[in-house]
Amino acid sequence: MRPFARAARLSRTSLPASLLLSGIALLFAACGQQDRQATGAAAESSPPAGEVTLYTTREPGLIQPLLDAFTAQTGTRVNTVFVRDGLLERVRAEGQRSPADVLMTVDTGNLLDLVDAGQTRPVESQVLADAVPAHLRGADGQWFALSLRDRILYADKDLALDGFTYEQLADPKWKGKVCIRSGQHPYNTSLIAAMIAHHGAEATETWLRGVKANLARKAAGGDRDVARDILAGICEIGIANAYYVGRMKNEPEGSEQRQWGDAIQVVRPTFAIDGGGTHVNISGAAMALHAPNSDNAVKLLEYLVSDQAQSLYAKANYEYPVKAGVELDPVVASFGPMQVDALPLARIAEHRRQASELVDRVGFDN
Ligand SMILES: [Fe+2]
Image (cartoon, rainbow, N blue to C red; front, side, top):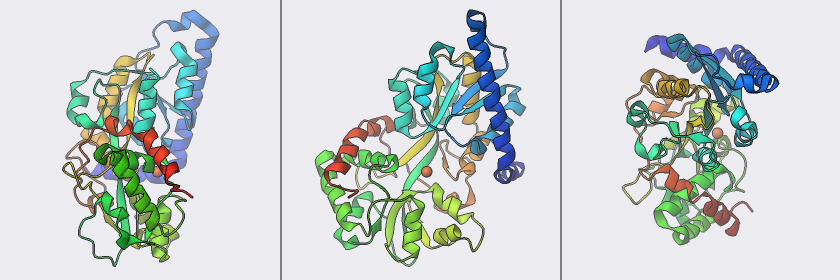
């Protein structure tokens, strides 16, 4: 395990090199695409063996160490194409000429959008089925979660809290004490969608009105601002993603963000019904519809759920491994074990639109 921990640290400090590498990869990918277009049908024949093309919306610095390890282990070269926005539009526009083998992104909704648009291909793999719990992947192998992004409670260090449920956010005892970002942000629509999946739309509307009534300030800003505003005494509790705590607590001592991170305690809320469980969103991946290197795509996906990759991948952004029993980042480990909401992510995501409409109806962001 030691050499890996070291590799993870190195990767974080050598970001410019990683960026350069992925920049080069992007160039290669772009050139490959031009060749394909220029030579037309001749290039339609199978591409050279030993490569796989990854389209990712994730920052290159986060995943490059993993991809390097994959190449070192398998000899398969990875062409990384960083697609900041418009992943779906891009693969759709490229159509059959798309060099993409694996599509990697965050948020269940983004993955389901790719599936719904018919831009993914099912993967049958026992390795993936064993590593990724059934409720955290598409039933038909169309997509797989690779890491979990739990939506948790940041609370003033001095508060005595014995557990917390998402439902309690609407408790009048927190009036004027809650901070949260826009209700329309996908992190929150995902949580509200989960509330609908558990309690139904009507009860969720009542709950959301209750949360709105408890806000200490306008629902705006980012997740880290919740910690900032707890430190400033503007609010006492708030909802935000867990990985930002890892980021803040690993900032240099004395820095602003380190002070925000050190000002809070962390509680993993659960739902009060259906056996509890903490709401998670994910980062995940799927095989691209036209994947020219489908065998290598499966190889890469399977590598990404190996113990080695899972630990490295999750630690790179302080996320939670999707596979059980994998070594955690120390800050993440300090939050204790996580029981994930057992509802299938796909079922939660069905309510995203309804959640967004509800946010507007109760004027959550006003
Ligand atoms: Fe984020």
